[in-house]
Structures are given as C-alpha cells and as structure tokens.
Length: 319
Image (cartoon, rainbow, N blue to C red):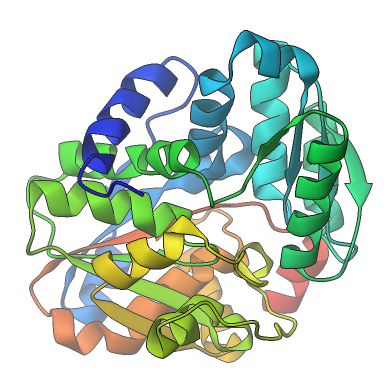
C-alpha cells in the first residue's frame, strides 16, 4: 500500500463521503480529565449513522465501485458493524448484496444489518473464516468483495475520522483507538501523523483477542485463537497479507492490552459519567487509556468511542 499517498486519499474520501455521514462530536470529558490529570476528549463515533465508525469506510468503498460492479452486487463479511454500514450504504446507493457474519454475532448487530436492508447469512465461528468464505463466494458469483479492513478505500474512509479530529482540536498529543483488523487506526494514524508527526498513536486490544499486537511483535501476521470478549467488534484473526499490518507496524507508537474486567469497568465509568451507550470495542479504548493514563498528565488525549451497538444482554452483564 502506498502510505505516502494515503493522507491525500483520506482528504479525497472526506469530500466524497461528506454528504452521507455525520461529523461526530469531539467532546471534552470533565470526568476522565479530572480522574487522570490529562485533558481528555472523546470522539463520539457511537453517534454516527448505524452507531459505528464503520460507515465512513463503507460509503467510501461503495462510492468507489464502477457502475458494472454496483450492478453485479457486493459481498462482505462482518462481526456486525461493518455489515450494518455496508447494508446502509448499499441501500442508499441502490446496490444489492450479501453480508456474511460469524455464527455467534450479537443478535442486536444482526438485527441492525437487517434493518439497514442487508441479506444476512451465517458462516464460521471466527471472523477470519467468515471473511475467507465471503471472498470465495464473491469470486464464484462475479460480485465485488468489500473487506472490513483489508482495502485501501475502506482504510481511507475510516481515516476521515482523523480529518475531523484534526479540525476539532488544534493540538493532539495522543489518540487511543481499539484495534481489530486495523483499518481505523491505520487511517486515523496516517492522517494525524501527516499533520503532526509527533502525535502518539496508541493501539488498544482485549487480552482475549490481541492478534494485531502479537503479530506486530512477531513481525508477521499470526494465526492465533480468539476467546470470548466484550469487544466482539475487534475479535478474530487477520487476513493473510492484510495492508493494515504494515500500517500498524509503521504508524502505531504504543500497544496496550486490557482484561475483560478492565473493559467492563471502563464501560461502566463512561455510561455513568456521559449518560450514553457504548459497545465493548469502545470500552477497550477507554480501558487502554486508563491503564497508562499516568503517562499523559496535562496532555491532550483523544479516545475514539468507535461504536455504540451493544445488546441488552451484554449491557446487563456489564452493569
């Protein structure tokens, strides 16, 4: 992937998807600022249409398809949020397609995909198996495959979150982002470092599925098992040859891994202090920051609240 060109591609994506997405607020958090001694800002992508940052990459990808590709239809794989975003974008743009999800996907997220107009089908128990099946299905049926993260247009679309952050806060010292496949942190990191090379990009992952963290440590994409986690949106393996591996290796300055107890605690703190919902992956970013907050006293810290799609059952478990 041409990382030098990526910031320019992100600016193009911002112009392309602007009419279709919501510029989400960057809210100062008095609670987390007082708790940690840092100046904490929350990028509220839980307030995005479909309740997740994934809509950014989905729209940028679907808008980049040729007329013939749109006519043939699309296939994607998702643990939920990417699927709902693709379904929403396809419906808005008059494109049809199929969305494969792992068998254990949250019913809330499956319902969200269906409400957005998606044709949902189940396959596999690990996100990587679902992706491989969806890619093969697309090839066999002459349809375009829309990766959740392993795609330059998707990464550029997610990077628009970084464009907004740079516009909303003049100086950012560090950004904490939950990582699954790495599309969000790759896009946001590429853009923010093009504006300020000294900004610290921090990856946050659950201990139960820290595949990217371990892969970067090993210098190659590893095939590791993932265990049940509140952060279902980041769980699962990484596709072989994924462009996001190099982005994480080159752009991420720090990796933080957190326990389920830390994630649950962070989610409760956010719900109690900010009176809105967040999903497990967003809890991972907060938990990651709280774990190392002592290093960021008096610094401007942004925590990306990447989504708000949580089931009642999970919410009950957390609170």
